[in-house]
Image: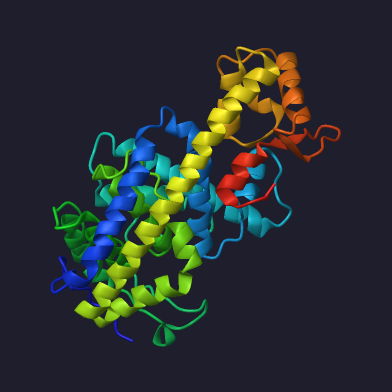
Amino acid sequence: MKPFQPQKLPIKDIQWDSLIPLIGRANRSLAYYDGILYGLANPDILLSPLTTQEAVLSSKIEGTQATLGDVLKFEAGDAPVEESRVLDIEEIMNYRRAMHHAEEQLQSRPFSLNLLKDLHAVLLDGVRGKFKARGQFRSSQNWIGIPGTPIDKAQFVPPAPNDVKPALANWEKYYHTDRPDPLVQLAILHAQFELIHPFLDGNGRLGRMIVPLFLFERKLIANPVFYISSYLEAHRKEYIAGLKGLSEKTSVAWTRWIDFFLTAMDEQAIDNAKKARAIIDLYARLKKDVADLTRSQYAVPLLDCLFKQPVFTSSLFDHQPGMPSKPMIMNMLARLKKAGMIKVIREGSGRRPQILSLAELLNICEGPEVV
């Protein structure tokens, strides 16, 4: 199988007429979701669990098995026994770190190929792909297939190494060009990135990371927190088939792919809005309930800590600014525990501390009755 030769962007002969209804729906759903984000006074606190959930689901598409609960328990000091699950968690945490790094960088500079390499370096730092040219575009041929498959049996062979940088230069130019519709442009950007497959590892995760970053940079959303991986994981076969179909280089294949991507954007924006609204409503309710239960001036700072890290030990509060003494914190937690607001997910034993969770928040993010 010969290496793929990607088309130059922009893609010509897209069948716009068939896409117009979907373009309208996807943009309206995204605008509604952005309206919810725009009204958030403290997005870092309220959206933190969903940011981790996106990292979990994007990594799951690549084969990891760790859940949101696994990640949060690990951060609270409850590591899984299986080494493979620990490695999964470390990859997920790197994904989240890369997203935070990108958001910080986009405050002062535009998205670029250099930033893309920086994100790749963060993504593969200390994990399974750390020796696969971390932070560098590939200089050798890669291919996609069942592990151990030789190149002549590959499902797809990306461009030859010498063609990677010219293709990426064209991709970067297209990224910063104004096009008729930014969501169609994003559909093409995501697919073209996966077709170029510019790194030896991590291409899938980086390609999905580009989605919220592009939306954020274009000011289509107030925070880079669009969680498309939930839809892509649920429609994995269709997602992969759509990308593979682009090797045909036909307007029909590209229109079919854009149709799939716009549907994903539309449905995921609606789902994201529901989750964000549920989290906002939960925070408002618990803000009142925690204040009533604890009768403390520290009720809101305590609740903010729980939203930012909903699986925790009491040591979470040791070095938080503006928090009271340890005995007072333990008294507040005891009251919340008695009221059923927080649940014990691991009893303390000897030097092992008790691990607690804000169950309602986890259940919003990962599904009903996870905890």
